[in-house]
Length: 82
Image 1 (cartoon, rainbow, N blue to C red):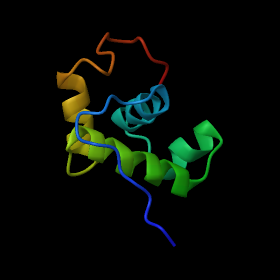
Image 2 (cartoon, rainbow, N blue to C red):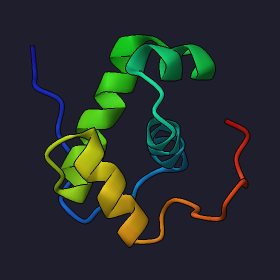
Image 3 (cartoon, one colour):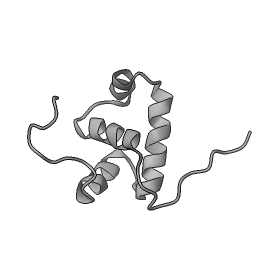
Image 4 (cartoon, helix red, strand yellow):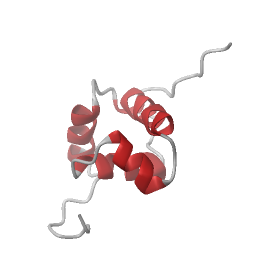
C-alpha cells in the first residue's frame, strides 16, 4: 500500500484545515471536531498531520500558535460562537 504524500513545508493551508485549527483553538477535542464537521476522527487526524507538515509544527498546540502568528486564525474577541 503506497504511503500518502505529505504536502511540502510552507504549502498554504486549505479552508478546511484552517476550520479544523480554529476549532482546536477553542479547546475542542478531535472527536468533537469530527462530530461538528460530520467527518470521522481519522479524517480529522489526517488533516492534522497535513497541517503539521505544512506549518512545520510538532503538535496541535504548536500549529495553533504558528497559525495565530501568521494571521491565519481570527483573533477578534467574541467573533466566534463557542
